[in-house]
Image (cartoon, rainbow, N blue to C red; front, side):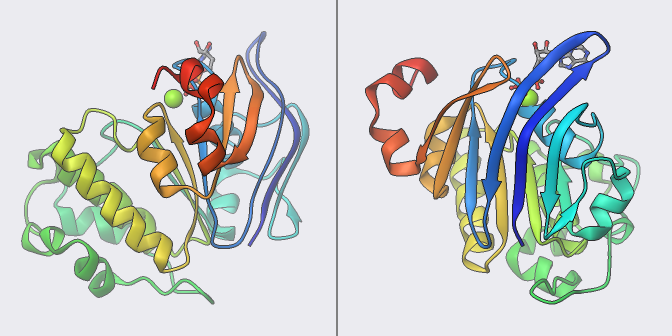
Length: 232
Ligand SMILES: Nc1ncnc2c1ncn2[C@@H]1O[C@H](COP(=O)(O)OP(=O)(O)O)[C@@H](O)[C@H]1O
Ligand SMILES: [Mg+2]
């Protein structure tokens, strides 16, 4: 699995938001997409998923051109998107939410309900509860568990730490580390740069829809310029 964006431009109506984004995510890599609020992180993930399709440029996934493919086809090819906020079916139970996304296993990605419950025992415990009654951290867990059941080759995560208490952010970091160790590739959009750079191998810093820095996580962590820009 390799994801490659070449000079991607995206718009909301007349507003030109992404100005030529080029990035890659290699097999088993965790790549951070950093930048201040409004920099274009979410739009980049939406462009990959075909939700805000690229108006020019090219997006390649696993050797296929997905630039103009519809979202459900992109999902079926093996990209799972975990949007920010509480995008769950709050009236359905935890189990029902999980089952909705279930896809057959594929080479290199063999998630089923049992394995998801092993990683997130709380989801097993709360299987019959309404998803809307879970805490912020538990809902994040459910969103990730649900995305895993689609058996993705690549997971796109948008601001997973948003709104979580610091102790839960620590747990989230451990869960994502488990997924990384299981070989899952991830593109992690975060305003919380320190969180993302602890987990990531490499990162990109976006500013006004352009890539301002691209480097290893280590270099980004240590660069005074990047730290000043991100306010960390
Ligand atoms: N639906 C929309 N319509 C018009 N402009 C939007 C919309 N969503 C986001 N934007 C604008 O696009 C820019 C990038 O937003 P976004 O990708 O959400 O940034 P980030 O995720 O880095 O905070 C911002 O200037 C934002 O105001
Ligand atoms: Mg965003």
